[in-house]
Amino acid sequence: MSELSVNHLLGIKYLKKEDVKLIFKTADHFKEVINRPIKKVPSLRDITIANLFFENSTRTRLSFELAEKRLSADVINFSAASSSVKKGETLIDTVNNILSMKVDMVVMRHPNPGAGIFLSKHVKASIINAGDGAHEHPTQALLDSYSIRERLGGVEGKKVVIVGDILHSRVALSNIFALKLQGAEVKVCGPKTLIPKHIESLGVKVETDLRKALEWCDVANMLRVQNERMEISYFPSTREYTQQFGLNKKMLDSLNKEIVIMHPGPINRGVEITSDVADSDNAIILDQVQNGVAVRMAVIYLLASKIKQ
Amino acid sequence: MSQKVLLTSKEIDIILHRLACQLVENHTDFKDSVLIGIQPRGVYLAERILKILQKEYKLKDLKWGQLDITFYRDDFRRSDKPLEANKTKIDFVVEDKRVIFIDDVLYTGRSTRAALTAIQSFGRPREIELMSLIDRRFSRHLPIQPDYSGRQVDAINEEKVKVNWKENEGEDVVYLISK
Image 1 (cartoon, rainbow over the protein chains, first blue to last red):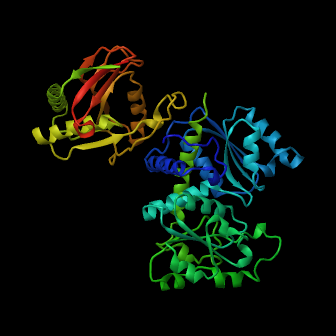
Image 2 (image 1 turned 90 degrees about the horizontal axis):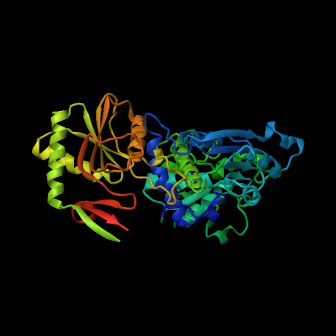
Image 3 (image 1 turned 30 degrees about the vertical axis):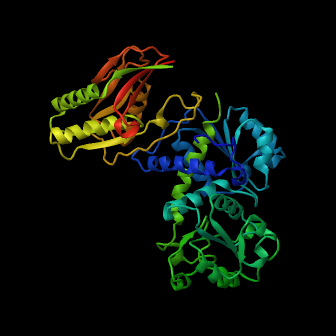
């Protein structure tokens, strides 16, 4: 297969196993490109991409922008804080105004779940979801799986535990879809209040004891507690959360095997993970960031190749 | 569809030896020279030439690489089929080197144009030469000519020239395929 089955990347839920394989294979080539003396290819020189960020982001936004520029696309950036959205413009109007300037592709982050899906039905452009509320963050899940594949040689059959705030995490949901699609075993671990009801229906197991979860897994993906999305208290105190679900070096060393530590960033050092763990050889947190550019280049390249002239 | 044999295995063998000999004439000890096979099918020819240079001319420490031009092509979004990339492997800097591009068929010249752009990502070569086994001489879209050519072929656009290699297709043979 040399073409994606979708015209937009709205979520991992809509991808097939072959799509993920193709994205990874293409990302391998781009990873080689971004390690050359000149890290740029001219493929997308006639494509214009708008990055619409209706919610704050540093890493994802920079990663997308860099990926676009490495492919020679023209890039325009937009952030909700300084726009007409504040003046009451609707999403479709905002995007159509931008598209009338001849934009081919939209990368969008939005606080509302399903914003990308909604947009894809109403505007004429290829849409990449860069995070929609607590729904999905497909490129993060792809780069996470890509990083596991790079470190462990594959994803199929691997045991992955996602630790932390599962309830508010789009990274968790997209990762569950991506890992299951590729045949990995998945557990989620965290305070019961932060684990959504009926999550077992997605084919994952729930574990509330961090030590047990770590002893079981090959990879631990440590998520951040998303205080900004919490309107009520889900656990008594940060200190208590850290005591029960924070990963420290002592616990890591006491396991009778080596596990891979991941984190989608931004890290709250000392809360979900201590500094000595985050900076240890087990952690592939910075590899994830580098792979993010290659994987996003692959996604953009493959979607752009479906935009007919 | 009919196909005609343009070159037999024996003819290919003679041509490969001649091409290698011509390279040695120009590059002598290959001190500053590097061979670059253009992906996907130029790589087979490059490997063959390399073998002859090593075996019959006793040249050691030859530098060679594989260059993929997919991301540099000028038909992205213009061809019906999606373009699929191949591996690039150049683990040396081409700065100030004498680069020899090696491809199986030179047709419109567009692949070579893309390769000329692609190689710049690895430095500024002192010079670039082009070797091709088959030169479809009247089909060029760009002002590009080979420095080393195996056989010149006059084929019309509807015809296809297919180079088969022992290591890939089981035999060395060049076909002219017409619809």
